[in-house]
Structure formats: C-alpha cells, structure tokens
View 1 (cartoon, one colour):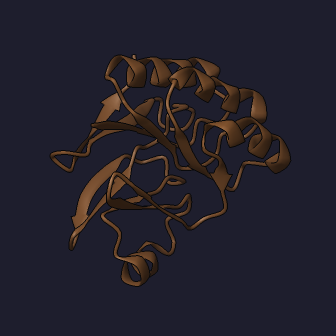
View 2: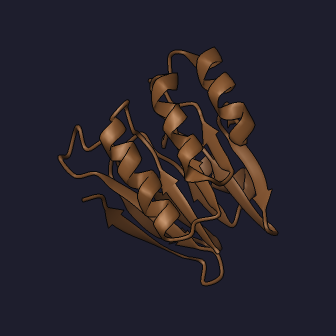
Amino acid sequence: MKIGILADTHDNLTALRRAVDLFRGLGCELVIHAGDFVAPFAAREMEKSACPVRAVFGNCDGERRGLKTVLAPLGGIHDEPFLFEYLGKSFLLVHRHEKLAEHLAKHSPDFLIYGHTHKPEVRRAGNTLVINPGEACGWLSGRSTVSVLDLESQKAEILTLA
C-alpha cells in the first residue's frame, strides 16, 4: 500500500500533473497534500489521482471556500492540525512546522506530515515517521519533489519530479 505525499504546489499545474501521474503509476491508494494549493483550479488536478485525498490548508490558500468545494468529493481539505486514521495507522497532517514538537507530544501519531519549509525531510522522532515532501512547485529551490510512503514497510522516500 503506497501513499503519495506532496505540499506547496503553489498553482504549478505542470508539477501537479507530474505528481499525480507519478502517484497513479506507482499505484498509490491515497494522496496527502500538506497545504498551499493556492487556488481551486490547481486543486482540480487531484481529481485525476483516482483515489481519496486528504489535505490541509496552507498559509497561501486564499480561496478556502472554492478549495473546500473542489476537494470535498475527494476527501476534503481541513484546518491544521488534522488527525486521521487510515488502514489502522494514525496520521497528523499540518502545513506549518513551528509546532511540530508540540503536535508530536500531544498526538503521538504513526506519521506526521508537514510542508511550508519547501525542504524535503524524512526522519524518525520516537515512534513517529516525520515527512516533509518538499516543494512540488519547485519555485524556490528549483527542485520539484514529492514523497511516497510505503505503509507496509513504514518507509518514505523523496522523489524528484522530472
């Protein structure tokens, strides 16, 4: 069971399409977006993932009503922190990184996923796997990245979008 993870797409349709194509090609059964779609037209690309989507609002997601409308049929977009379970595992989804230690202490999830920094990271914090997929848009670093989580092995890798 694979889960596609992305964040900080910032209306970059080309990168979003590449990410969705990659996730579909790898057989991902869930896609998680850690904030900053920016506009609803970009979020529509998630419909092509052909699987459920879990997302949180980022600081650049201005048209919240439109994003809710687009993403509701796919699984929705939520305020952070958003705690959910999937196949018996707990996920804590946030956009901003400032309160990661506080969130870990309060919730102790199996996986904590965040964005905002535009810097990819995969690390362990106790029993929690912490994942930042980096920036899918590639606007700041020049590198478009996403992550794929293998739920069975509980390992995640950072992938660069071509």
